Length: 165
Length: 122
Image (cartoon, rainbow over all chains, first blue to last red):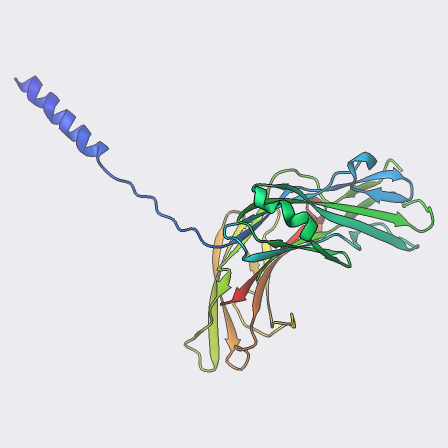
């Protein structure tokens, strides 16, 4: 009898414990997050050239934008036009580049590439759809007139901005 | 030429920079002649520990403001609430408040994506 009573009591206690609620609360705010999914590397296809193009041995940086609300933000991406660190360079540099939509999470974003606005080394995309967009940056540098880059380490900075409309 | 190592950076893992709210409001503060607004910064960039605040008018002209840390030191995965103070005379001009990632010089080879998020007045 005692055993039965203890068993029932144990089951009741267990039931009581399992009935405990553990609420997890959260809010979703309109926000923009900028991720650097892949960071870029310059290849050196010719002595006078550095390039992030995969065919040239480089790697294109891929930047991901997550926007929680549609039509709240403009993405503004800038490809580099100066080195942040490099060996001493005595000749001029010619900087070129491009920013493209690499991938999208929503079919409604398919028009982003055609609608992009470009000026100087800046490309703007109007983020009119909520979700994730990946952008890839191409950067190419030519030193002098076919002049060899001095050996050393070269770093350039690309900028990714998210501006509330 | 094989000794040339040129980087935009090394790693392939994802890092993120977040700032809220998207649309901020400026309220009066306890200090006379000053108004304030508050931002929350979330650092999911393991490669960045410093973010710099800046304020602009509608034409992107910089505006003066005061805060305890203009250059905020924020650890990876940490959240910080930052209050920014404006002079009442500047409040009507304030349009954008931005945070920009700042890289330490010795860390520059390990990352070369600068991120900037701008919130706008409500």
